[in-house]
Image 1 (tube, rainbow, N blue to C red):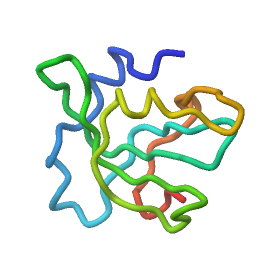
Image 2: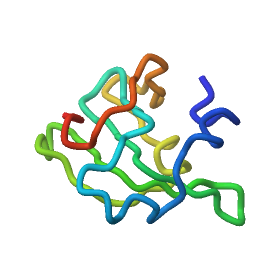
Image 3: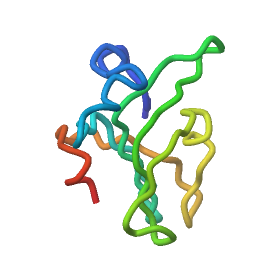
Image 4: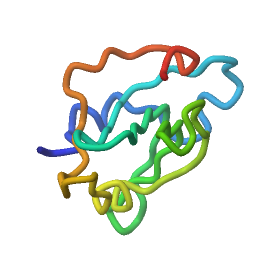
Length: 102
């Protein structure tokens, strides 16, 4: 599965574009199908090396309330769940405010 597509690139707000929004909109959801990690992406920007830097919230069994921060697409691609399955993009995810991403 392709984690980034041209359609996603075109709709993803640039980094810091929602920093003054009290409840920014999550545009993407990545998850481990065989573990408890979920990334909710609110913004992203393509880097000079072709990688993507994302801002959003990660939720897991280690931090069930979620933690805000930055992550690279290349880092997400390296994650494997309990049975070694790669991270997937939730193709049916509907955009929603960050406060509703749990």
